[in-house]
Image 1 (cartoon, rainbow, N blue to C red):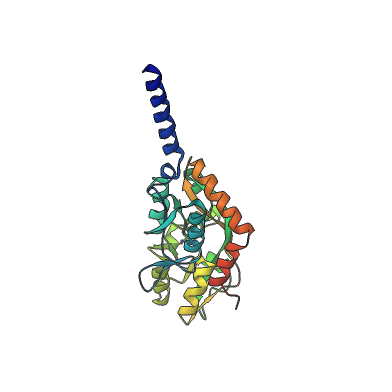
Image 2: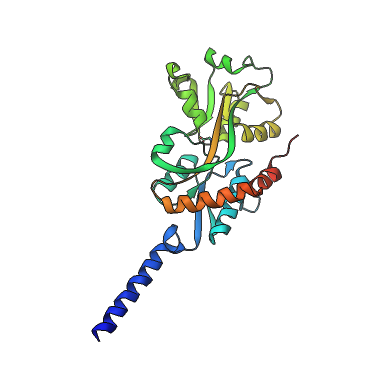
Length: 256
Ligand code: GLN
């Protein structure tokens, strides 16, 4: 009888260990991979006409989920909230064209980079701002809250920024563009790909030739969740190596 009890105990321990190590214990919700994002960042993430989600990040996340045997769930929220969700363990990954920087590295972990982001300056055609250097002449700069565009521009002049007084932070990039069209700001600093889309959609705007900053996009995971980070990174690495990521990029970004 004692032997049987020991065996039973051993079995229970093995089973519970298996449960902890299985996919169920790895993600916020069993069988699912929750991605927090801000689906207003074309062509990386946007809402479709029927209320679904599409974009480079959404599709790459879908392929990663597939490799991990999980179902992708997209949780749409503000950009800052999307970063917070992954830090607080309310999402498994955050993908939102997120630039890796030191401050974020202190608060979350990142996979290898899967894309390059470039901060550019959008101005109305005929603007007196013709190069990035003209940003030193104290124009009012529009940005999206919480983004690296905001962080660089609002930094102190001794750190290469223009000071908070010269920067307005809008909830989304789209709202910043509306403010630019309405003449409430003189330019908008934002990532290149959404910038291209906004300029295409709004005649009278153009992107300056000079780039403001070049950055790496990566997937954020909760700090210390090395098991998930490893699995996501491995899946991402395979998808980069076999050309799947490039294939997704090519369907959304056509050279023209
Ligand atoms: N790449 C920028 C950042 O990480 C902007 C991202 C975004 O607006 N979705 O801050």
